[in-house]
Image (cartoon, rainbow, N blue to C red; front, side, top):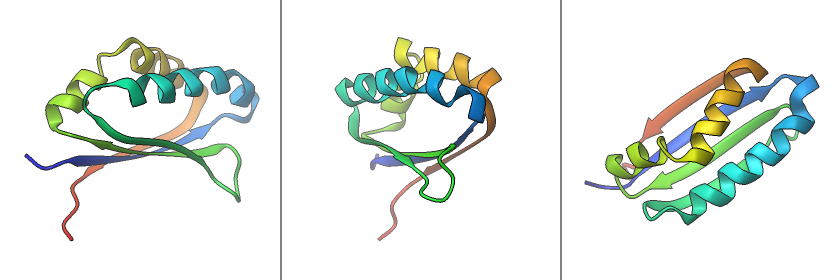
Length: 96
């Protein structure tokens, strides 16, 4: 199976911006260490500092499934449930 990309757009509630920083740091650092992670980058919108875009590349669906069980991801997901105004996740494959 070919690599898969995830593009996740997260709109953090402004009052939780500072609280998200250490969680984002753990998420990115932990994810980059995972065996199936090819690329993992956290980006912040220039026009709206509360919007973050995570661009990820994984070796396989199995690697994504494993990632979703990792403690750093579970912590992020639990925190995000109550502290974001929006979350949009797209899993895509490169065609060209």
